[in-house]
Each structure stands twice: as C-alpha cells, then as structure tokens.
Amino acid sequence: MRRISIFGATGSIGESTYDLICRMGGAEAVRTVALTGGNNVARLAEMARTLRAEVAVTAHEANLPALRAALAGSGVHAAAGPHALIEAADREADWVMSAIVGAAGLVPGMRALAHGSALALANKESLVTAGELLLSTARAHGATILPVDSEHSAIFQALVGEDLTAVDRIILTASGGALRDWPMERLAHATLAEALAHPNWSMGQRITIDSASMFNKALEVIETREFFGVRPEQIEVIIHPESIIHSMVGFNDGAVMAHLGMPDMRHPIGYALNWPERQPLPVARLDLAALGQLTFRAPDEARYPALRLAREVMEVRGLAGAAFNAAKEIALDHFIAGRLGFLQMAALVEETLSRLSADSRLGIAAESLEDVLAMDHLARIRAGEVARELG
Ligand code: NDP
Ligand code: MG
Image (cartoon, rainbow, N blue to C red):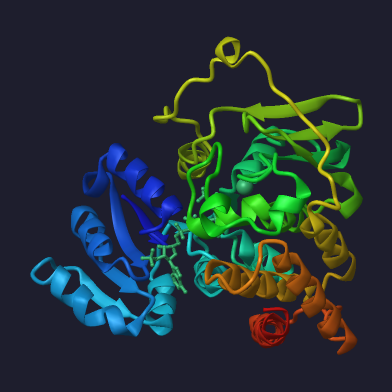
C-alpha cells in the first residue's frame, strides 16, 4: 500500500487532500504515516483516527496534552513541536503533501525530499525562499516535486510531452481577489473582512488576503521562475476574474495551451495524488455555455506594487526570495491584527527589502537551509522594526 503523509492536514488544502484520500478508500487504500496540524487539535485527532495514522503532530508544544487526550486508546502516536514535525518528515513515505502555510513548511518538505518521497507542493513559500536548494535536493535523492498551486499544476499539465526549449512564455492568471473592482482611494481603508471575501476560491485566511493584495501572485511569479526555470521576462500575469483558465503556456510556434476547469483545489491536489495517471475526481464539470464569456485585463502595477517587487526580487535572486516572503508574512500578521492598513503591507515589504539590500546580503546564493532560515529570521526582525514605524 502507498504510504502517505499530510503536513498541514487541518488547513484548507489539507482538508481537501483528506477528502480525496477518504474517497479513495481511506485506511483501506493507503497507509497513513503522519498527519500534522497546528491549533486545530480536535480535527487533527479525528483525521488521524479515521486514517489510522502512525503519528499525529501538532506544531505547538502547548497543544500536546490536548492531542494526547483526543487520541487516547486510538493507537496513534501523539507528538508536538518543530522537532516532532521533522521527525514525522523523516518517516518514510511515498507521497507527502506539503500544505503548512508560510515559511514553516520549508523544513518538513525538504526532509521529505531528502527521503526520496514524491512531494505534492502546495507550500509555494518553499520555492520562493529556497527554490534552488529544493530542486537540487530533489535531484540528488531522485525525488519528484509535484506542483499543487492551481496555476503551476496547470502549467505542469500543459508541458506534459513538450520540449521545454520551445516554451516562449508562461501566462499566469489571477482572479484579482476580493477588492479587484475597488477604486484605489478606497483600498487604503479595506478591512480584514473585506479582503477575505474572495469571489471564486475558498482558501485559508492568509492566502485569501494575499490574493487581494496580489502578494499571492507575486509569490507565484517567483515560484514559476524557480520551478520551471524560465527567465523572469518570460512570465506574464493577466487578470482573469472568472478563474476558469488556471494558466497558459505559450510556445515558439505561436500556440498557447490553456488549462481550464472549475475553481476547485481538489483538481490540482488530485492530479498530484494520481500522477502520472489521471483518475476521476469529484470536481464539477465545466459548462462554458452557461458561463457565456471569459474576460481578461492587464494588471495595473501601480495598484499592485507586489508584482513590481516580485520582479525586483527575481533580479537580485539569492536570498531575496526568503527576505521578501518573511517581510510579507510579517506585513500580513500586522494587517490581520489591525495594526497596518491594506496598502501599507506593500510599503512595509518594500522598505524592509531596501534596508536589507543596504546590508548587501540579499544577492548571495543560499548554500544551505541555514542560510535561508537566517535570512528569514533577519527579515522578520527588520520588518517588525519597519512595522512599528509605519503603524
Ligand atoms: P490554512 O491556513 O488553511 O492551513 C494551514 C495549515 O498549516 C493548517 O494545518 C495549520 O494548522 C498549519 N499551520 C499553521 N501554522 C503552522 C506552523 N507555524 N507550523 C506548522 N503548521 C502550521 O492554509 P491553506 O491550506 O490555505 O494553505 C496551505 C499552503 O498551500 C500555503 O502555502 C498556501 O499558499 C498554499 N496554497 C493554498 C491554496 C488554497 O486553496 N488554500 C491554493 C494554492 C496554494 P491549524 O489550522 O491546525 O492551526
Ligand atoms: Mg495559486
């Protein structure tokens, strides 16, 4: 039986992954090695019992007594803390879902690759912060990275059987998020609840806000550059409010291959789960006649400074991705806490990057995970300082 683990099982991607595994037959169809979560201990224990996992891990030590109590008599081992997450990643598995949110997902995913597992990668932050290290670890251990981000899964699928040297450009589609039709002057006062009202996709809180600010697309541009090895100028972003085309690949003969489907993450997760085969998935059928039209517009870079910042990060490369992501995470924390305005998030990230580049550390290529984690740490400190000045 295939051995699987889900990191971030209690999140939006984790729940969809769990749903697909249950539909495949659950504990009768796969051997569940590890399931991990954060604060949602009750749900983690419920999933671990149903799938008869070997181990359930909460990221936070303080949650261990509650997890132990919830798993009493189940035969599932309970563990907690960053160390336990690493230990869980060291348990041999054939297929591992990386769906922890934020830079916290980097280390477990890296460990899974070092064990040669197929890594279904939802955690785009891993590629943004440590793209080269991730790919070289996969190569060194014969491991496969399967993109789960819907755009990257779409591109991956459009490239099956293609000659990569014939790729001319990659066109990433963006819904534009909850605030896409707001006038600029209103954006500064957007509240958390307003930024969370995503028109098409149901996702975790953090990525939903990142969709509204386009920081999500900024991360995805960098993710594209790292994963597919294309040059930054080959990557385009287009706003496509219906979220039906998940991305496109343009070839040197003028053909553009688009991947279409209803916006449901169970498609890209299921594709990664069944790869290299295709299997039926519980995804609604696309009815183009009912939709009537698909629309597109160019993103206004003045409105979305995150896209410009992503271009700057790709120019510097090295540790700039780690700094960018960390600063973005701090900006988001402050927005969620009501300490920063919606437009101040980009200002904070830009100022943090400019202070870090004055230290001239950003362009250095990471030689190890420690380099990445050190830059992540430093950028969080700088971003915290900038936030206090702005707030
Ligand atoms: P959620 O916030 O819904 O879930 C995050 C998961 O990570 C939960 O299991 C949470 O535990 C756990 N977690 C939170 N903080 C930590 C931490 N510090 N250490 C370990 N575990 C932690 O996120 P999503 O499912 O929306 O996103 C997961 C990843 O997938 C992100 O990288 C996101 O960018 C990416 N992604 C998501 C998409 C989506 O549709 N949601 C689409 C494309 C990519 P708990 O809830 O128990 O506290
Ligand atoms: Mg995406």
